[in-house]
Length: 150
Image (cartoon, rainbow, N blue to C red; front, top):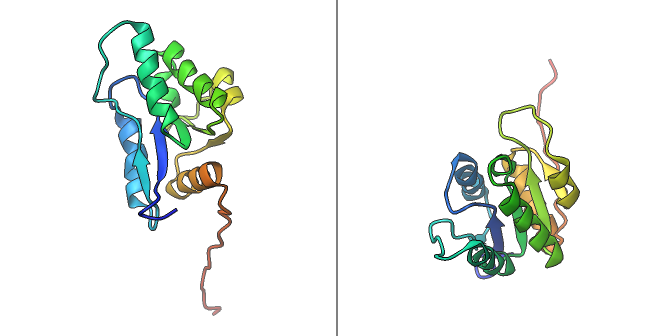
């Protein structure tokens, strides 16, 4: 992964940007030496029926290397969120499922069954999961903590 070859990321949406959607990109933007291209287009609502919406989602997911699934959308838009996860899996795209932000709520079994990996809201964890699932990069890192004994 480099600036010339960014990881293509699709973040689940229902043609609106909510706090969780924007938070994903805050995390990705603040990561050092991480280059990505967003293939999701929530601002471009297609005209037409339910099948037109699904076709637009297929186009967006097809261009991605990894799909990030946001569970907050599931309660109100179960069919579209499930469709996104199912299409990603059918297309052999890894699905990174984020936990609920700031809530200790169990994720729906339907989503965890479709996820390749489930992670919490952590910038480093998100970036590592994307790198590992999209490009099979070794993401093992060690933190060095320096201290002086008294």
